[in-house]
Length: 262
Ligand code: NDP
Image: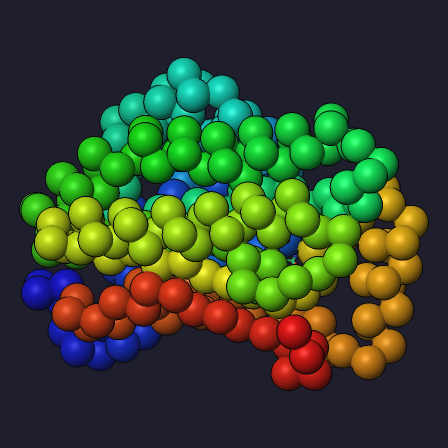
């Protein structure tokens, strides 16, 4: 930042930064990777679908950016560590981590969809922690060397609000929000800004994985009265968080479609 002119800083506020985005093969993660690259960051994109990541990297390169595809299942801690090592070797220490991969599988608790409970816990909690564990050393090193680093965890408005049949998903997201507050206490003094972002409904593939008919009908019906958020809205918000002056940290950002009541 110190070597840039103010004009460069305003158009490319993430120039010189190394961003990592999990869940980058679709939805919010995909839009965020493209946006961070447009703001000047080198971006490592992580997810399981290699073909989607390769397309994304090609689009970013065509637009003049730099991106690295790393195919990884974030529920596999050893694989995430290997991914982190590769990012460090090829791009340098990450200084912006958007910990975004997640899944939402609502269903009435009495249906005992224990397979879906476990998938949400494995990805939204354990997977998120694997990523925190593998990349925190890089964030701390980068903050010491470059003066700032950002850890942005994607939580949900479900961490705050009550949605019938969303208990397990909401529980995983409450974990993410509360975890973020605690990490902020530990890492803030080391110049790592920690944020939890809590979006309301965003139109992505997330809704396509829902198997419960009642929840699907509720989501589909809400489209009639609510102009859902778009992935780009979240991407721009996270880009804004990371572009703020180094002294400024937004610990918790609640972002809702204007017409979504809760
Ligand atoms: P998508 O389903 O479009 O994106 C989910 C991403 O996670 C995909 O890129 C998927 O890629 C990746 N992913 C899934 N499982 C794994 C895994 N085991 N390892 C690595 N990557 C994985 O949904 P969104 O973009 O909406 O979701 C992103 C985040 O936003 C989630 O945490 C979600 O909870 C949160 N959120 C979404 C809201 C919404 O309404 N859409 C609202 C509030 C929060 P792949 O399958 O290739 O691995």
